[in-house]
Image (cartoon, rainbow, N blue to C red; front, top):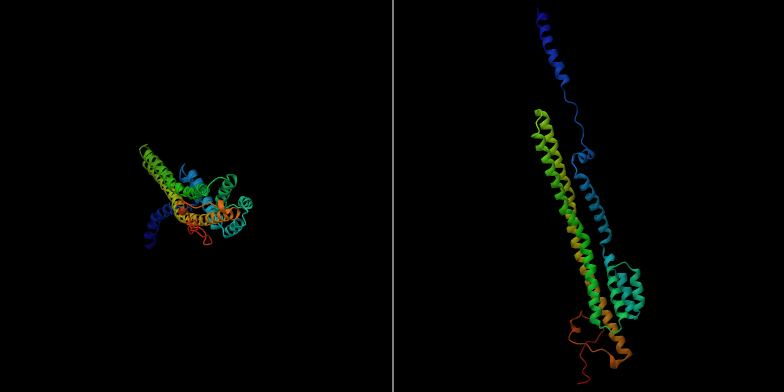
Length: 277
């Protein structure tokens, strides 16, 4: 009697169990970066190029934006020693062998002074200031490229987002059976989100390192201004002292405008000449 009851029940449940086993979903595949890159749409190659440029510029600025690359203690000591020996041609040659911003400023000022013997020291100072402004502008312009990437990368990602959403809604309105429309919509949405994430992933590090390098450049420019003022003051003192030694009667007398220059070396006596009173 029992067997007569169990056998029909087993015959009823066995097909259902077999069907459930056949409908078991396959294991999920792991999504790697290569798959995400291809699923991001046409903006991903542009973002990839921008990411490589960002990494290269960050590594380059970490090596170049150093104090010794702008003004080093070794250069300042050697330049001061050459100026005190009145070896201006030797200092020009030494500046040509040094790859520093301070060397470029000193070389431009000394070349102008040696080639124009009748030029006033105010003109030499103007030449040094112009070259210093150019060097400071070059330092500032270098790091601004990171800010440009930080502003452009989200826009490229936004373009991919818009194109992905357009693709999604186009497939939804294209007809076909319901499952195909849902799959096409999901594909377009994933493409738009990947493009947005790619743009933000590039922009955030670029802006963070730009803020860091901008502060570092401002400090280097401040050090460059201080070193240039110190070297120009020593040069002015040495030129006046050499002129007074060679021809005391023709030594240049300072005017009111000269006192607006940076403070000279303490070795120079700037008190007014009271002998003629």
